[in-house]
Length: 175
Image 1: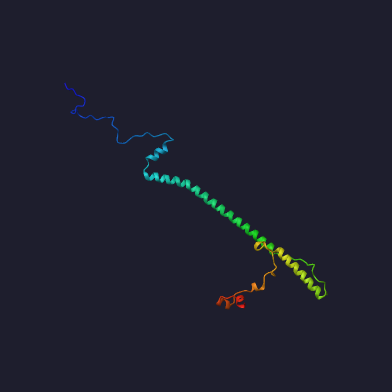
Image 2: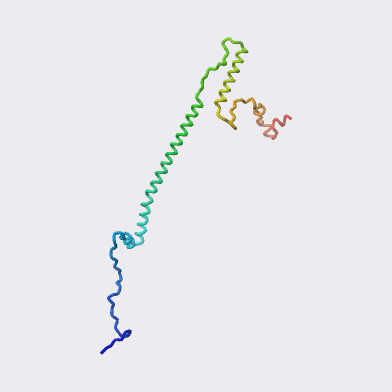
């Protein structure tokens, strides 16, 4: 009789039928898990392509929305600019519209020369007052058409060719 002892090295190897096969069998998952299962079964190139396609499908509507928003903003700015321009044109037309008025400072026909001069001076005063009232506000809020405060010497103190060559102003040369 032959008795085999456990752990005896002379025993022939018996194939185990419970050994795992080289390819694993995974049963088909449920409907909710199916996309992940398919994604895992795909190769690397297909995975990258699918991810890029999903990103593109998300980015395309966003890009179109941003583009449309930019166009709307540009159109709004053009409308505002046109409205500002139209208001400026209307303001300038109102400023430049001729104002016709009959003066009370007119000498009667056949009046003496002295009376005509006085009437002319009064008329010039009215014209100056009307111009000053119509003039836009200038430097430091001054509305003035009176140039009598500017001396003629300061207006005509331009450098002459002699002063340009020598560097001496005409006022300093006269002293």
